[in-house]
Length: 225
Image (cartoon, rainbow, N blue to C red; front, side):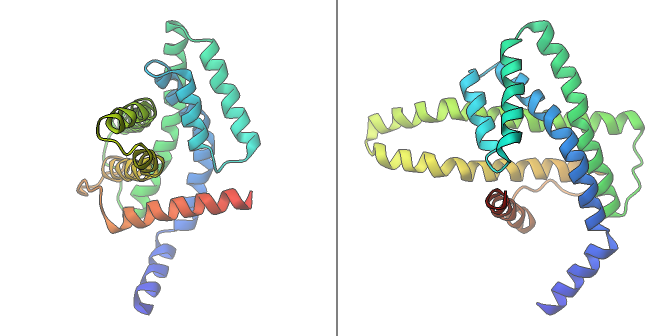
């Protein structure tokens, strides 16, 4: 255990993890608002506004109240200004802004892997945009489950009984689903953003530890705030 801890410490120092984390935190703050706008605009095309509000409340539960109010206000503006032209323009600008976070993550991962990105500029930008779209689509699917999930749960409960049990499973099962969704997102990011030949893996010890740590740190951060 001591040897592992020492090797981990040296790897963190050699890969400049703290500097990479600081850079990603900076770009994440700049990208979170365009990403929320992009996902919100995309979601409003397929799911009801109330469901989008519910999803935003779940995602931003650990954030300060002031930040949640700003994001909710932006979402209300999107709902009131819904039209084909506005939606298209909003999607385009928000997608470009949100993809800048993916670009920063690509740079950090290439640095950590010790690789020089051999792809062209346009290839790198395309990968960042496609990865951003993929993450957004998964987020919209998760929001859609908020609509379909209770309906399916009630339907199954009405046919086989056990409504209270299904309600319990749905309440806590959606958090397990959120964790699985995050692992899928991480697998996509680690496979396609950096210029590596790493295999596509969803269930790895690092992913499980990372998701667990993310949930715990988010809860503790919410308590701290």
